Image (cartoon, rainbow, N blue to C red; front, side, top):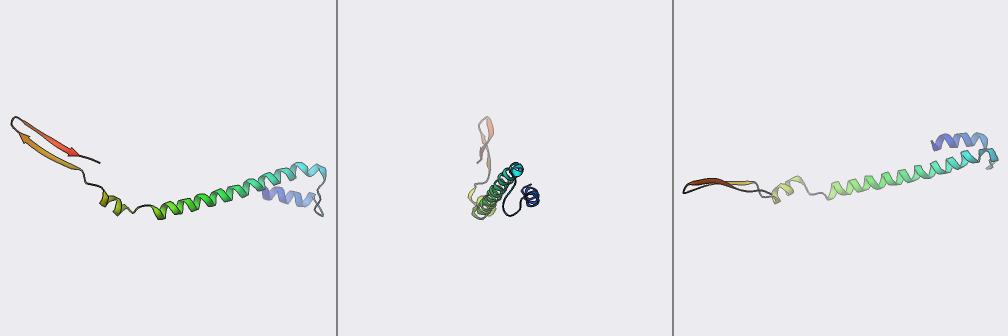
Length: 88
């Protein structure tokens, strides 16, 4: 959108000066240019953040090694029976 506004302004403005009738187009161009720049910066920050999260995340083998497995133990007593379990 900013590129199309810039192209439009190239046709309307000569010698670095624009007619007063082009002021709305010029203001719109400046706003879109700023939003575009901010969007690129935000996207770059998100990409870098994603890379940092991927690089610093624990590997799946380390996560599995640190967890205790599920334990289920049967028990039998006088007149009773059951299961004991441990879950994480």
